[in-house]
Image 1 (cartoon, one colour):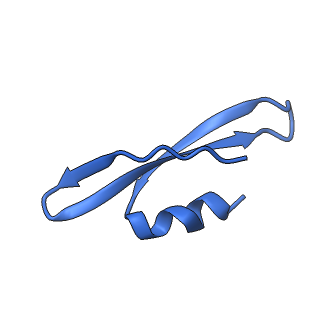
Image 2 (cartoon, rainbow, N blue to C red):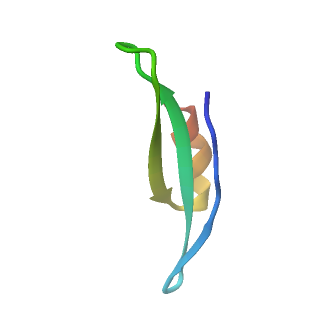
Image 3 (cartoon, helix red, strand yellow):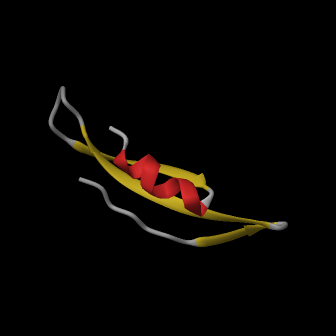
Length: 50
């Protein structure tokens, strides 16, 4: 499962995107959220990784 929230972040001339992914722990079964700030073109590849 993945949850994506996009916020437009400006730093100089770079445009960045904040992505949030929901990850299930194999040990406990609980869900945690992993956040990352990256270029917009890298978001779909990051969300598809396990």
